[in-house]
Image (cartoon, rainbow, N blue to C red; front, side):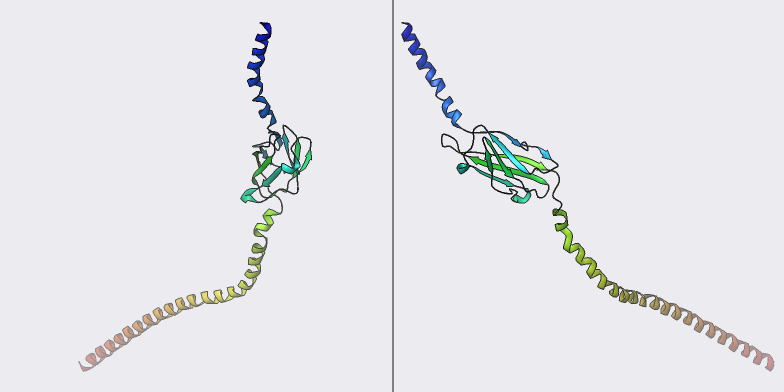
Length: 198
């Protein structure tokens, strides 16, 4: 009777133990440096991924991409036990995505991502954004200085035109004054003649 109960107990425990075996065969990520979701001011030289079991180099693929999907992996990954590290080549500040795909003991591949944000870009990026264009306009601005003299000469006709208008106005006033003087003289002469006749 006791043996029958023992057999039944073992039989009942077998289904509980069987699902655990395939689950243990799956590999998984246990940690990373930088951590997932971290904000990093100083770019690391290498990115490290830590797994539950040692991944096989033949079935492991790791890619690192930065802003605008620019590759940021500086070389092939290196393996040390359950750790895999990849040289990191930082670019512009922004989000970096470390994608991995590794094999498992049961043959099923495991894939995932680690994301971190680099808050400062490389020193080479800012000069490349406006190095040649900024130097080119100053050189073109040098020839524009001679062109400034025609601009000044073009501005000078405007005062000349104003002067012409002002001269024309004063000339008209002088003509009116002369006409009034002539009328006054004519009137004076007429008065003298009348007085002389009288």
